[in-house]
Image (cartoon, rainbow, N blue to C red; front, side, top):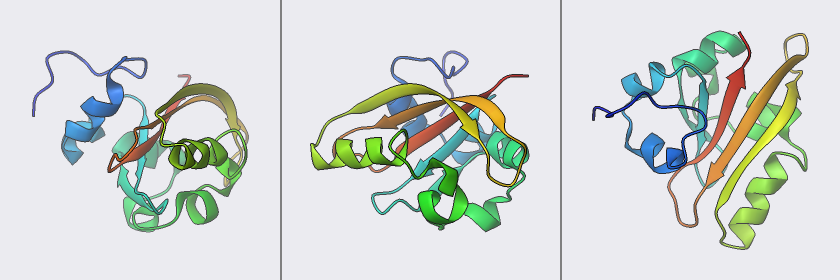
Length: 130
């Protein structure tokens, strides 16, 4: 699938767009993409996030995001929002100023949390300042 425009972190229809992108198209994005399934296991992980976090796809894919890959996100600001959206069968689209702290010096980022009721993937998007 080829997108008609450059995919942006702030795009209004980004959840549906991400669902339609192939792995190589996710890798071409200029922000981090972490896609988790209904169990919280990472199933989509792009090259930008792999390089920025210093974690290879082999180390991340199939692992629980909030307990193994990024326990620093296992809190009310991130993980709990996904749980609440799941429990209430509601959509989630929230952008949060955040500080990543695991395996690195603290790094200020913006996280965008995306989920839809019944969707295959839920996403944590990571925008880092350059």
